[in-house]
Image (tube, rainbow, N blue to C red):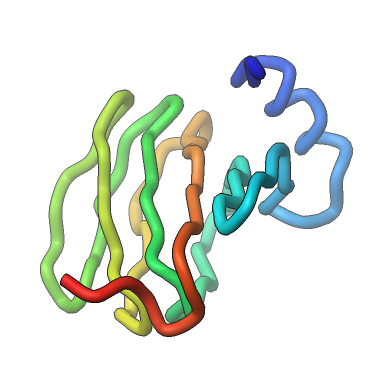
Length: 106
């Protein structure tokens, strides 16, 4: 299985949502996310990984702010408040949800 970011971005440009599901297998769900101006995410019920496809910005994860850019890997445990801020217009990221509801044990 291969998912090309350029093709996924073309598909999401035609969608009304900033999220688009591109792959599912077992507990793994892969989405592409391209927020527009404001990231309105709420804490999720499963563990989550982001891999930045393009652009840059800031990421707030449980109150900790980090600069992010293309290629960065981010992890967010279940239930933690997080969001992207001050991101560039070309910002997009892969989003991988996995594991059981309530997250995996550390």
